[in-house]
Image 1 (tube, rainbow, N blue to C red):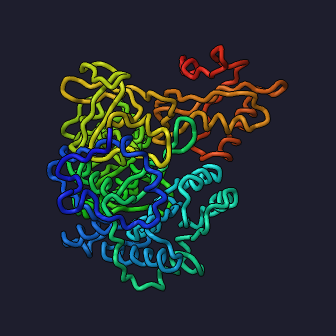
Image 2 (cartoon, one colour):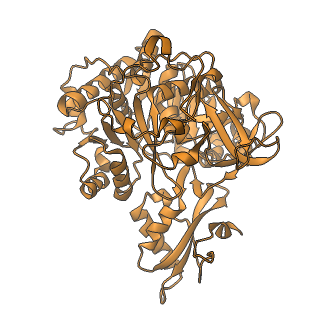
Image 3 (tube, one colour):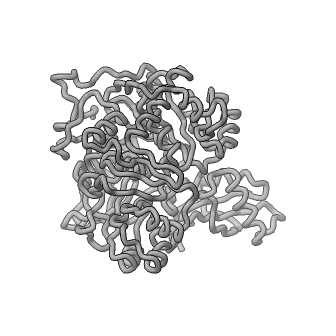
Length: 557
């Protein structure tokens, strides 16, 4: 079917000819979108209150919303060293946009790779890129050169903004590909050529790029089950529409809220929860200068006075004892996503704090959460109901809705949807306008959705997506490995862990030293969270008559 816009939030054909004129003169990303007949249906009738103009710049819209509400002088970005008001942040964002366009001569539509952890510097860099009409391509700080090279080859960024402590792997990827023209560190205060120094030379007077709402704001990379990364493309309209869905109807944040959490800004879950949605509410975000441990997060929540926390189920389970010990008197809302939330973890947290966790399922392809429930509407064992702005159903292999109580594939439609950058896997994700996130669910008679399992080979461990074949490829590069198979196995703390079944070459010892050597090898090759926490040595692997690895047999106890 062709691309369909439905409802009041759709482009106003009468006043804007369906679309406003694109401001992005670099058409690289636009030209690599799927053909319109493969696009999801975007159904704005599911949010009657939505009113999205044909011309909109996401960042400009968020700042304008805050200023019109009188929040110019309220805190927006916090750390242990500095607090920036909305007015302060806007000036710095404008200075960054000036640097990108004036010093590096980028043009709207160029891609900018961002590499950094959660920090004020990373947040400002992301906002500056999008304010300038460029396309933000955020990458996880844990990624190695091999993984960064794959992103560079697919996104073809014109520039990279990188945390100075993370330059080495990016420079290796730059050398491998020869496709990244320049790298600029963004947090060196006295280094000539750094983003901080260049920005300080600007006056902060900048007119936001007049993007069409359907111009591209970001590419979000996600692992495919084959290990080859996919780039989900989202427009300014997509992100603004997402702000009107889960944040408005479920989270219901206020300008007085202080947000903390562990999801990286490089994930759309973290980008929404730890930057975009707080801005939409006029709230503030706290970014720590060091990494979290469960106890440190509880202590920092109390020290900062955080009222909203985002983290994965694994962390809530580990934080529960410390929350019981120290209390969390100002914390009001706790959000979990990224992996399945066990009911035992939800009850443990509730017993320790008195608070219901807000569970949710979302997808990089859909930008954020589309099934969830407010704390007052929780049903034990269920993730929740379809969020306003979305509708969901459980279907069979042919897309036919199954009777309530049946287990089948989840299909979703709403105000956001999947568009991959130049990827044949678009046909797997979108069918007849519906998005298929790759999960098996059951829906009860009251509309609550109960997660069952992934229906593909993706491993979700402590909120991170890991593709088994990618880990297999890394293991096979070790000289001791003859063949291997990698799957996810259930784990009480992490939801799932990566497990490798390995056949060694003749004469290689199947011992603890070999296990550690293989684990260290994977950590050095891929992002460390992808390494196999369990390794079992086998004389052979189960295969079909044609030699295909039978991963389903490896998953069986």
